[in-house]
Image 1 (cartoon, one colour):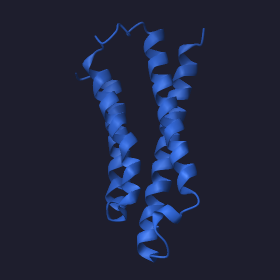
Image 2: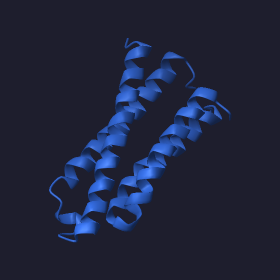
Image 3: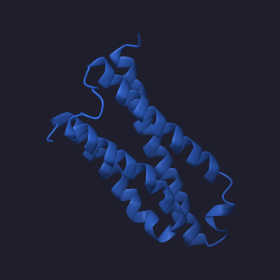
Image 4: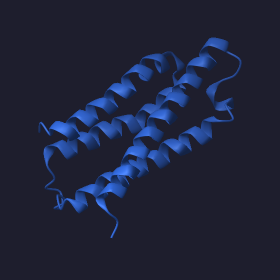
Length: 129
């Protein structure tokens, strides 16, 4: 059996990788807009960044549900509300990478993404729902 702390490390590593990938994707999109050298589709690192983003989301889910299993919280769809709130927040963060296609929104998304991640952490810590 994998210990709770190992799942926690995987979960946190996924969060850090997700925010790093989002920052890279959005910063590159904003840079393309400023330079107007080429569209984001011509970015050779774009695919790698999106792959890292997907791996990060998988790690977040794996670590999160692993921790829930170790705490014996998982009981079908009858999960507590705070878990559903976190799933919703991470789904939104999963879709933020698509904003790289709209460079004008990349700057605001660079501010919103860490705030959403912090909100997810707050929900996990205080479990308000």
